Length: 208
Length: 208
Image (cartoon, rainbow over all chains, first blue to last red; front, top):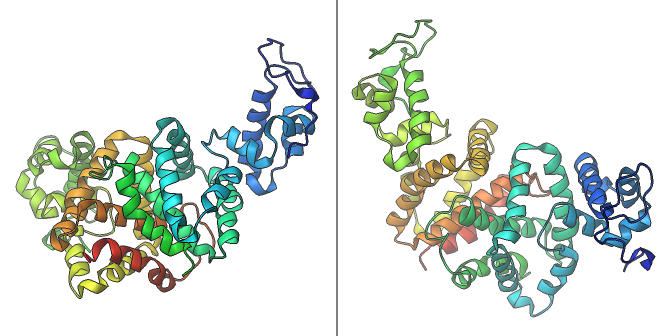
């Protein structure tokens, strides 16, 4: 899917090239510059209205270089916000397999992933920002809708509100387990929790 | 749901009596002084270790006066954090009635209550504080467990984790409806949402 010229290969190394104004070729900190630019653009415009071209302009680089490093707008967003997974890659894996087990696959994936603090912390940090910053709310809502919720809704042919309520259940469990740390929820094994929550998600997504 | 003793009526009026050091009788701002003291004590000690005596000492008043205004420790907590309901009064109402409809009663109550911005905002403000302040986390967790979750768990004889996951579902829906404002979840009628979410809560609380 990469549209970038592979000619940029190797430029992201350990060179200590200094910043220069204007368009830069792939200097050592180009990837970092693009990420800083992306955070600004996503925050100002939200996810839907942000473009790779606009991010490239902000970073002072060629759009092809942004494609080279991040492939898609989803990819830049995930990198800029340090999200643990790229939905475009993960959602199809969760949806593959028997429809009657989709709830279990989804819950097991999310709970296993968030059991790792390094995967979980950026997600919680983002929710923390959303609680106090309306720009972050818009950015998250648009990304979540376009990159996660709509993909599942379309693939499974379910009402959008069902997917939103399923998301609310899974996200609520993560908040209560890792932020409020209610016991026994905070200490229970992932697999035991999967058995409790999966039937709920299956009911919302199963399409019965 | 007023939390103050109704006998305190009139005392909290518009008088501009100045603060005085030391123990005060029921002056115009005594109730306010107790609330300020309660916020400090709950924040420092959490809910479980806070006492009416300690709050009274902090406020420089007699403990009987704290009882007079707020009745119980639950009552002071609800008033200090401007919570919309006092769980000791609401939980029994939700639990009364047919067991096979407890999920529907609970979801309808919470969604109806939080449809009112004045009831909802203090709850969201508290969650906002919890996301960034560990003292608030402890305070909320202890109050929620003692005043809400344990009451339901004991009355219904269900595993505590079931109630925690049910709470996660309902709270998650409120977050997605009013903070992230996902559509169509943010605009759907309360009664339609009750029909979608109630079977989930019934499965967790039904004890089948």
